[in-house]
Image 1 (tube, rainbow, N blue to C red):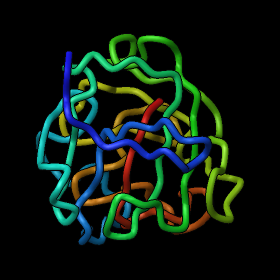
Image 2 (image 1 turned 30 degrees about the vertical axis):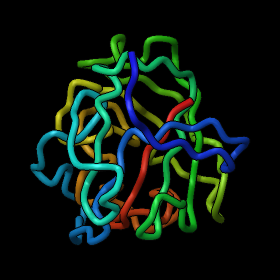
Image 3 (image 1 turned 60 degrees about the horizontal axis):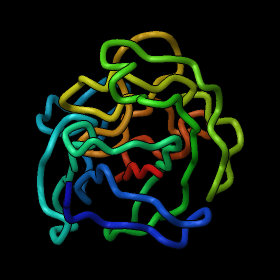
Image 4 (image 1 turned 90 degrees about the horizontal axis):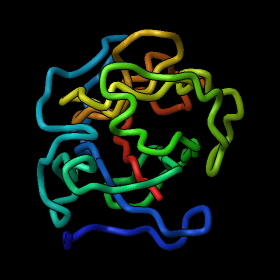
Length: 172
């Protein structure tokens, strides 16, 4: 299978494939779950790699991507991280195993930024959601990266200092 993608070959050792990127002008999320968008998430396709101002989602499930790590953070209006980036290791076949569930992976590893206690990202999954890349602090659906930006509820380190900021998700 051949597809066109964007790879980050420098952050945290490189080899990262871009799965999703929110638009540059997120809304003020407060503590709401999603932005009621569509075609954004693990199983959704939207946008174009060339249009950095618009939301982009690759459809990792449809492309059959296999990976063991997720890199996520805020961006600066391009395809570069701005301020914060974190890494999780996930189970094999993550996209298919956790379509309608999620699991506790614990706090992510800080790659860039100043926050070590990012508990909002302890749970990952719900890969069948068509409006988010799901990350959550407790057991339950909702929150994560939407086409409008991060919905992490907290404007502190527990929310990765990313609530309301534009964001990206990569895998390797």
